[in-house]
Length: 357
Image (cartoon, rainbow, N blue to C red; front, top):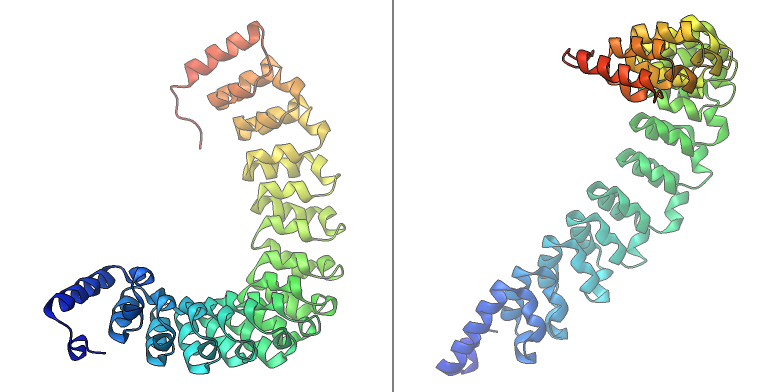
């Protein structure tokens, strides 16, 4: 109501203007206002304009003002939690709330949380809104298809039956190949589907069926993206020298996933070290304790000595070569006698040289 129409005196009008000024600066101040102010549409409007959820402190008659409620949720959708139940069951008002904040869906009525269109609208603002959807929608193929189109993560809410629907899995996998983790077993054996997923990301190979992880073509496609895809290959392919060589040349650390025999293959391990000096840690114990081999590794990268056997890291001859290649290798020496002193001197002399890249 217009305060000037209430027959108030000048002093009272001054007090009202003071209160209005307070509400314009801090809408939450409405909480401590007298009932006459919390019942005044204009005053509550000032408070809500400043702080939308101040509507919680409005008198019942004012809180029932639909236009006021609409204005509040358009500015902060989560205000829906403070509105009357009739507004929480108002489709238009709830739609405005989720447009502003998708998570406002949690405060909508059970009836509206079964409304697929409203859920999808909320998900477009925040995909996590699907968490508040009615469970019956998780068995609805049309809804889930639309939901995963918005975000592949919605697949995590789909029923088991729908996780066996190829079209739904494909839509999700095209966004993120790891969506295959939710697919039923028969789809993980679908070569065309898995091939598309692997083409988008090598990580999808880990969800392929056992037979497809033994498919050389698929594994090669994954390895072209990252040598680390070797970890998802079958045991047979992890023992295939040509395939493993391709993997370690792409990423030396892929040596970890090679067969025991290949981790003892001198030439192959050296190729891995050329890619990443830390690959030596995955070489066979015999190679890591083989002085001639370790010297070959050091010739590639002096810091590879870090992963040599403890005995060789205590060898002055081996460590001298490592330090000559990269003075920083001295920190991996286990020698503590006169030899250690000599290594420190050698490192000091060579530290003025730039460290190898």
